[in-house]
Image 1 (spheres, rainbow, N blue to C red):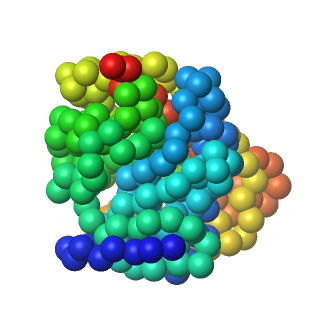
Image 2 (image 1 turned 45 degrees about the vertical axis):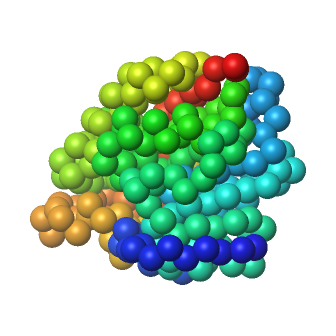
Amino acid sequence: MRKIPSGGGKKSFRCDAKSYKECRPPKGFLVDRIVDQVRQAKVVPETVLDLGCGNGGYLDEVSKIFGCAAVGLDSSREMLAEAVGHVSTLLINASFNAGLPFQSCSFGLVMSVDSIHFCRSLDSLLLEVERVLSPGGLFIVCAHTENDLKRQTLGLYFPATLQFEIAAARRLRGLSDAALRVGMKSISRHRDRKKFSPDRLYIELFMQKCASALHHIPTSCFRQGIKDLRRAASTKKKFAMHSYTTFVFQKPFI
């Protein structure tokens, strides 16, 4: 693994980098969705770029499946440091809001999981993604829309957090239009929901206010949410929910 520091990185998560893989380990159904879309498009990426790669979990799994080179970009040096030892890739400490420091037509696949809500300008980002994609390459985004947020465990048990999360999700309404404006075509959109039975650690992470929005809601709302989570856990049923929307765009062949 090689790492290129470029400065300016800042910590974006309430959950510290060392415990992030416990907070948000790669979700198998999202890895499967990304891989399935690449195969359906009959794209064979030689190099994959992950925007907002965090500790490299998704990048590691996807690049291993395709046996391709991998590049990860993230604004948090702490997160990139956690990728040391388990990701064989090039890691760059930079923000995708400052442009992409790569040559044109460098990647067969660009992906972004749980990070595009940090984008300040979809038009600027999509222009850069289109530039660095090879002809026929894919841009795959896995993110939470407004409806996803309402179905997620956080929104279900701590509804007061939605006022802080919805604004960022609303910007995704313009994602497809931004892609079209830079010449990419929208191939597909998929909604994935998965119920699961979390372990004790999962609830402990909520108690530690792993999600940043939990720091902004009234104490009474937070305590009620924890109480409801514990009650649901005692039933031993699948009460937690992951809900994502995956957007797939393709750069036309020349």
